[in-house]
Length: 295
Image (tube, rainbow, N blue to C red; front, side, top):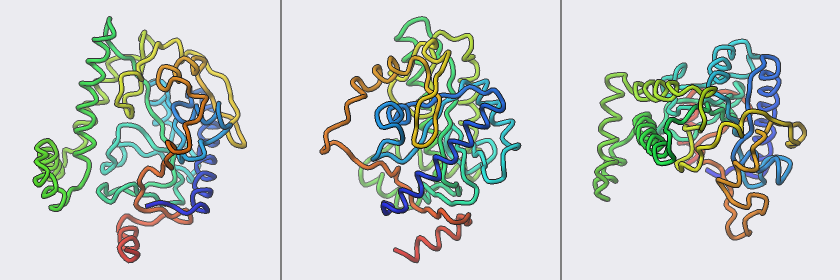
């Protein structure tokens, strides 16, 4: 579903308010965090959210991320922090800080109701004495993580028949496993294992680090020294932290990140949401009923 320009503007205002609250919370509790990816490009190139983007992404070194999760119950009731640990139907390995007075569903295959949100990724050490060893670890982990995300979905017979028609054996296997894991109530076991694997590589003693919850390219692996300090950069009507090595990091990932893509290459990024209500929190079933009534 694609939102109207008015809804998009309101949504961006919502997530900026969440980001401000997140920054205040981190300052109050002495927690490290950094703007990253498109959020960092937006800060440096546009002084805010990239005009055709619609999200805000932060990373936290693992020790700060874990402490943030522990302290999140102290937040204003206006906000909630969602993870696979406190929300069984949530199917990702990073956290989302949500506005608890709004409703957001990325896909009805996931039986979880969120709010307008910012993404918060843990950053961990990446083991390996050579580039090849680090990349091997990265891609092995990615395969496990993708399996966990697929298992978190609720698939229909139509989905399975689609895989059968296209002879997608891997897709069929993931859907069968998803149903088995749901029946056995074991769907978060893979994510628990993912956490254990990453936490075995402490951020503070690592030479190279990465946030493994999103990127599919090993170019995300970076020297830790790029993330050992920060500065504040303008972002919309407030400021966010950027790592001191943000130029090297973004250049490694995107090349000339300060030059916008040509107009024909720009695609609005609405992240494929299925339902949004910026005025109140509804249940998943209420959202599904409203969605069906409008089709």
